[in-house]
Image 1 (cartoon, protein in one colour):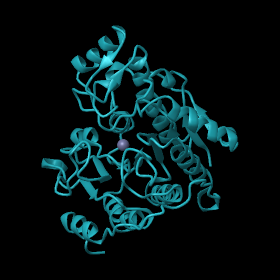
Image 2 (spheres, rainbow, N blue to C red):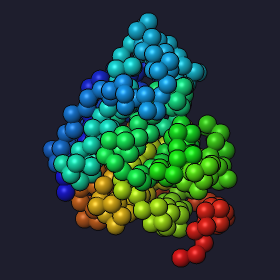
Image 3 (spheres, rainbow, N blue to C red):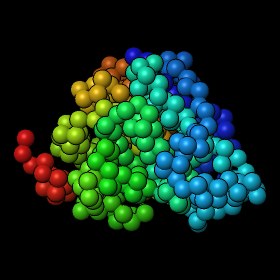
Image 4 (cartoon, protein in one colour):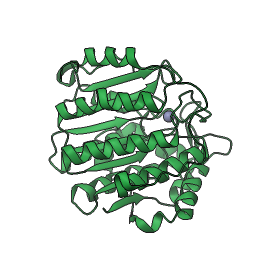
Length: 346
Ligand SMILES: [Zn+2]
């Protein structure tokens, strides 16, 4: 297998001391990947800034100019959570462009799969507004690129960040070409992602929300994969799978209350890898969203790369172990979502 990774030092320049979404996240990931001799097994994908034309498929020109202006003036905040530093505009262009480039390389057959280690993250960013630490919606931009420039008809986005990707849902809720499936803590930031938000108009049924109470862990996520995500993906028949990979559902993450372990994240990666092989020639591209416990984040990314490269043969490396708490049951929400989306038969 040839697995690619995107990284550029400009991602470190988008940084605010004391903010959970800071440069230490990527530094820690790189350090663990290096220590475990993972980088030398991967193909480096050179990021290039996203073009204006591609960026405007998802964001309005006046919003793009606003981000640029705030950065040029020395930085500021788009909302209470979302900071802009002098380098943030260029970093955000590079993050989106890096994911687009990884997607291009996978679609052109240069890579089997890839993981874009980019910052700032993207899944909360709306057409006209950044929010939730996100400036431009990287995964939405990559999906639009694949549809517009590679002639794809169906792209699946799976989002397992602990927060609902409201920006991604907003972009595609009336578009049948993109299926968006999100697991997230609910009710929680940003407030969207109820199971009855299922798309509208031509896109009805192509948004699948799996809102979860706190306390869902490895067993619950394994069931959600097999009982919701796999059958929905088989019905949709994607030509590419993009993944909004957030690691803030780890049991020790400071921002949320879920109970996934590093092993649970590896199992998710394995299930998505299997799905991509069965449905779309293995075409699978991860992009980094959240994850704020540095060790949990870095080791989850390490194991995800291991699974992308080696599949079942990868040997798990987990210094934190399983959650010490008991898991919450997902039976009720699985039934609710399966009924909403007609997944109850077959
Ligand atoms: Zn998150």
